[in-house]
Amino acid sequence: MLKVENIDVYYGAIHAVKNVSFEVGDGEIVALIGANGAGKSTILKTVSGLMHPRTGTITFCGQNITHTEAYKLLRTGLAHVPEGRRIFLQMSVQENLEMGAYINKSVSQEDLEMVFNYFPRLKERRKQVAGTLSGGEQQMLAMSRALMSHPKLMMLDEPSMGLAPIIVDQVFGIIKELHKSGTTILLVEQNARKALQIADRAYVLETGSITLTGTGVELAKSDEVRKAYLGG
Image (cartoon, rainbow, N blue to C red; front, side, top):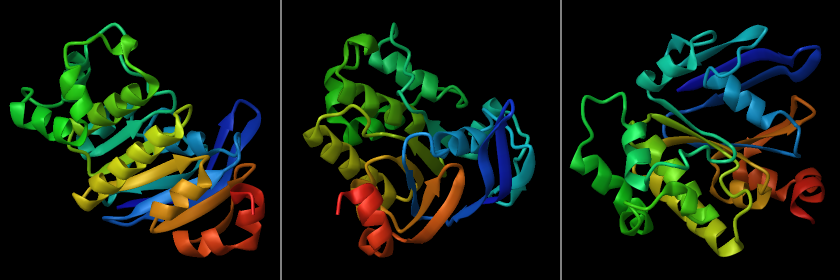
């Protein structure tokens, strides 16, 4: 579904992503793990058109999207849930969800019920101002907003950041449910243990380069990964 080939991404003179290549197959959960500053979020921004690589190509569903603008990519079936959630704080929960469906001709009750089935708490708070939600509820809203566009590929950037452990478990449980329902997922996550537990495959990034790749199970058993990211 997604093929990234030999991309180099810069912030000015800073070489943030170095000759990175990876693939996400239809129906997979693929994780990018690594320390803060390794280039994980930069890769997602580049795939979603918020940044553009200096070299390399990005292909999504057979279409070259390397220099496609972000607002056009949503219509291709690619959704990005950014780090920090980036919900519309002054809008209600339902208004945020309606914004997620802006590429559709209208907001259907079926779509709203679909996301409320995943996130029942949001249904209870549908009229509440989004800025008054808890951190976990805001993360659920960010994911729900992306779902309203019916994405083929959902990219999640640090969905567990700043959340209590019990909420982290809930969020990862929902990610697994989304996957079971047919959504392909590219997951960027510092919580390597959680990411590897649900990932079909994973890539390890260090200072902008991919250093290891394998199944989630293989990497969870790797001495190098355990020492660096799992505390083992």
